[in-house]
Image (tube, rainbow, N blue to C red; front, side, top):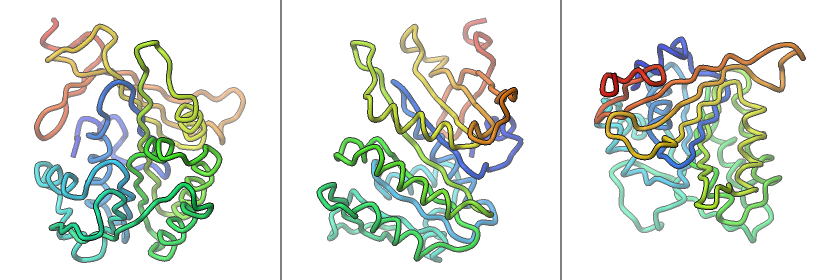
Amino acid sequence: MLRELDNLLDGNLADSVLISSSNTDGDFLLHHFLGKAIGGSYSRIIVLALAQTVTHYNAVAQKLGVGLKSACESGRVMFLDCLSPSHTSTKVPVHQVTLDPDEDDALFKVYKLIKENCSPSVVILIDDLTMLVNLGFDVRTILDFCQHCMSLCATTGSFVAYIRNDINDAGVVDDETDLVQMQLRYWCSLHIHASGLSSGYSRAVHGDMSIRQSCLAQRKPNDKAKVTRVQYQVHEKGISIFAKGTSAAVL
């Protein structure tokens, strides 16, 4: 897990977390929160895998020293795999899920499956919502699905969602993806956004990161969210976090 990030977050897993990225890979944050959930006291962890295979999750977990395979075999972690064909053999137990945007109740069926396998202390992790937009699900349906999942985690659980919102060569983002991100940013008590450097690729600094803590929907008019802005470098088994412009490589 990413201890330097934990230090910034006071070591707690928020009740609702939005991870977003633009023009960089934010997957490392998703794997961090999955590892944190497995290492915590949550009785059930449900992963809706829309973008990464369970094989990839397991490979990353092994590098981070997270016992994902054993957690899946014990039934504590449930993988809803939307990527692999039903005949695919994996080392980690999975539950195959088919998503068809032409079915009016496709996401409701997934929510129903999640609800049936919930426990009082559950973490629901979605990777990533951009795929639902790309598949053709409308914004309202995606947000309704997220809100229903968040309600399952409201008491003692945690909702974690990842969305990738890249800026194209014309400097424009996808409107529907942007709407989903903005609404979830409003709902979630923690929003971590990773973005590529405006100056281009650097071996020493991989990107900028902003960490916003507090639920905008529950804030009073004069309240301000706590925002921390840092830069980071990803390593094989973790990341280094430092104030902007203070990387040892550029000093």
